[in-house]
Image (cartoon, rainbow, N blue to C red; front, side):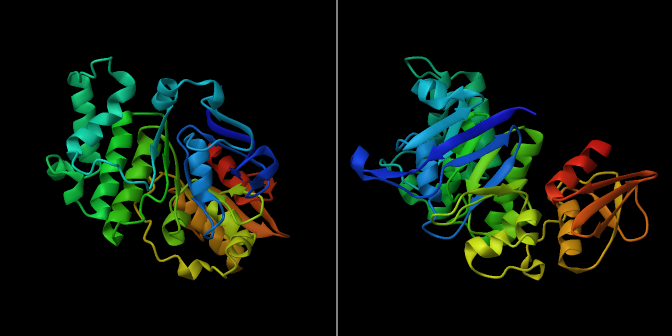
Length: 331
């Protein structure tokens, strides 16, 4: 699988001088593969926005490297970056009198010539982006006439029009109402699974991200970043530790049924307790049918291990991520 974004010992923070540099957390070494949908989460003050500003070149990292599509970001020209990476930040556009259609059209900047003339393909992509974001009716409106939630959708449409393999979104659901949040996560899942877009977005909506993302990057002040599938982070207690509050499966009220592409395979699961619940949750999130009586393969939990049985073959895994990756290979 192709590696789309890699952070190698990246140090984020702020510095007024080399002697006055302050890192917000230990060096970050994580990666995303093509088509991954990853949520960046953690308590306030963890450094999520600072990380996004470093990834978008708004601030320089204090150390380490960022690789996009296996290319060192420091060596890329601005136009090369903009063809690989699109960004949705919480900052507002300065000219609030711009029309929505013009803002979205500006996403085509990396592909137009010096005269910035849009061709037929450009306009098709712009129209499609407006449609995917659900804002066709706003195309002729100015930004100043929109609500905060509508402005956020415009910026998402602009990122879609930029048509990059990697999309970064800083709190894209911050100003959206609940139905719009559901529509947003559906859109992000469609872009990642059907259009092979690699998407990293920050969010505090734990119920929504736990039931829908492929992985979570978990941050907390002065703690190392942890990367893992949602169920591993919850079952291990890392989510509770980083947020400082208990989080149980019963609190996951977001309805993720139908958001994952259903698979034609069923898995038989035996067990009890919290680990058993998170195992079932991980399988359902990935689209597998879960049964307690029959299935193409059988799973159980014993001695802290996840055990997979396929006729005479028995395999053991210490994390749900390793287990679900193996199940994907079976089918």
